[in-house]
Length: 122
Image 1 (cartoon, rainbow, N blue to C red):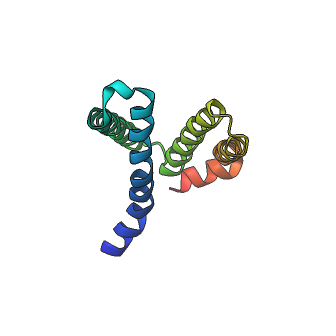
Image 2: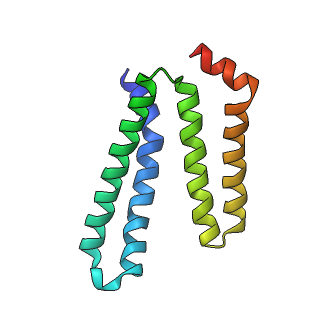
């Protein structure tokens, strides 16, 4: 069980470890009068609120008997769409293409007949 927990949590922890300092730096640069420590505090609060909202939403969906497969694909699509918005705002063409493909892939799996079959099986 400990190995499985480490395997499933490692990607999320790694991503958080990479994104959190980048968010702090971006906020400090966007609002220089705010200061580095205030930027860290604001990013931490936003991360906490996002984690709470995401956890509550997933818990509600799963407890409402929405198949886990469909919840995961829906969350993946939302995340890819948010990444697409970020890439477009930064004029990052390659990242925009990658995020678009990820969102479309999740939608195809979610809407396709095989997605419904997998959703019923979980």
